[in-house]
Length: 102
Image (cartoon, rainbow, N blue to C red):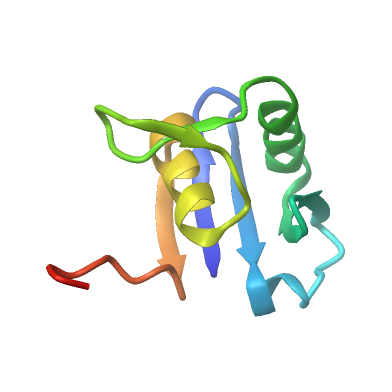
């Protein structure tokens, strides 16, 4: 999954890569490791993610909750970017939404 966005609080754009897309390892990104998973992110977002994992390790799944443990699994980190960081512009290869009965 590749997520791009703009964080108004930090005043900068960001890119986050997970799964197979994280192995591309562009030189402008840093690796973040947690719970046996790794992602690559632009430096400012990597610092924000490391801080959240260390000090506020939860993510909102929707605008009104619930809060769940922050992990680097695609659906959780995408929810964190969308509802806690904000500014998600595009998502390529993101998690598929659950369907009724599935």
